[in-house]
Length: 395
Ligand SMILES: [Zn+2]
Image (cartoon, rainbow, N blue to C red):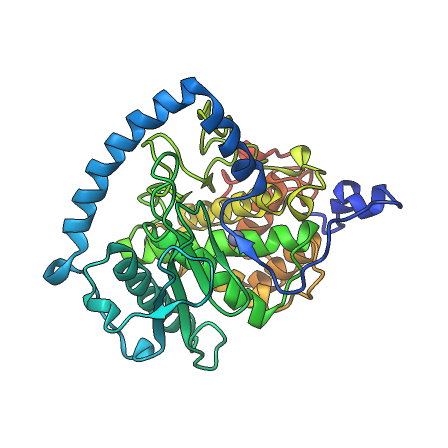
């Protein structure tokens, strides 16, 4: 058996630093998609003349892309497929480049010629349908709540966020970021912050905050995979790929945390760790919630991979294989849950569903072992001493 003794304590700053000072606790998160370690570098990059040259090039390229996308989405070409579960509960407001919320209500947003309005509407409806059809959910609060979004927030605003009662999307600066409505996984990420708030109310700090962020990436990626009908191998496992200008860049990679961007002119290298060996003890960003989320993100990816390798037709799609385990497991978490609590919850759910010694529950445990959250020295059937790269051969 995989040793279920938690090894996370060694990595938890609360255990190591008795005088650990934390940034102000937010009970209700102002959950931005762009973390401070990126947004704080944009100004510096603008100030650099070399970067300005680069910015002009990418902007010209971006406008071509934007025009093409606008044609794709406008009017009769819109791919909207309104489901009964979303009727009447999706509202889109236009802040008209000001900062007051929610702004002006848009009539008939599904027919809008404003690409930001149309995309915010489209993704709200479709993400809501995803949650309804796959997990039986009734809107973001599970009680039929209106799903409210504001687009065109501020001028060239480089972020999107869930504000406790609505989503907010900036236009992006057209230099480093596209409009923040462009990716379904970004919209689903923000809507999942709402789901998490109403279900688990996870604190936005340290490991609970990193789980909060990870759940948003996980369900965000699954929603995108669901829309595209991507199986495990077809999925790109990237977050915000279209959002970031430059085909080689994404915001985050669940498949390979730390590889979403390299040598970016403004942001440098992606700092996300894949395993606990590289857990980041930063006090920035509420204890690195957007950085350490790479660890559970990677565990989710590995679980989906392991299940796919058990049976590629039965476990073809993440939202049908690993998704239900996590959807149930997250309901077992308290607001101050640690990574160890998440490990225990997912293992318990997998064992309850599939059995204690099932291949499926082993697949879950091996993934946690690979990110160094379970002792991986006792893989069953391998005579001990198994390591991450070998973990799934017996499956
Ligand atoms: Zn987030």
